[in-house]
Amino acid sequence: MDEEKKAQVEELLRRPGLLAHIGSVNPKTNQPHITLVWYLWDGEAVWFSGFRSTRKFRELIANPKCAVLVEPANLKESKLQAVLLEGTAEIITEPREVVEEMSQRIYVRYLGEEGAQAAEPQSWKRDPENMVVRLKPAKLYVW
Image 1: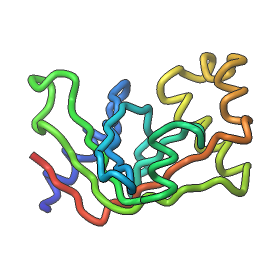
Image 2: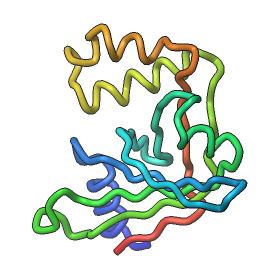
Image 3: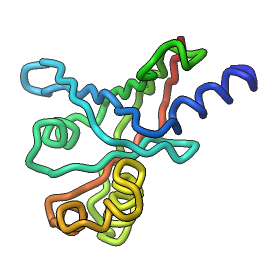
């Protein structure tokens, strides 16, 4: 990928307010599941958080292969239509400090500093069921 395309990918993945489509697969039925999440791009990997009891996390624990799709809210504002990242999810439950720190960074991205200090996101990040996923893409597709 040339430098201009890399810059476009970085710009899209860091754009505020966008949601990521997470694709996981039920390992027993092979039924795909897609859901939207708040995410954080750190320049190397996509991070998202959630609770162990949700379908996406149960599926990722059983089968960590997944895909993440990010697309601009308005195609007229972007040179890219989408970025697709594929790979194996690294599910992080410990140390709890990492789970809480990355969750907080994700919440700040969507709620701002003040909003992320509210009782509800603070309780989410401290909940023992909360975990974070780091997906460093094995493959990256851009169109």
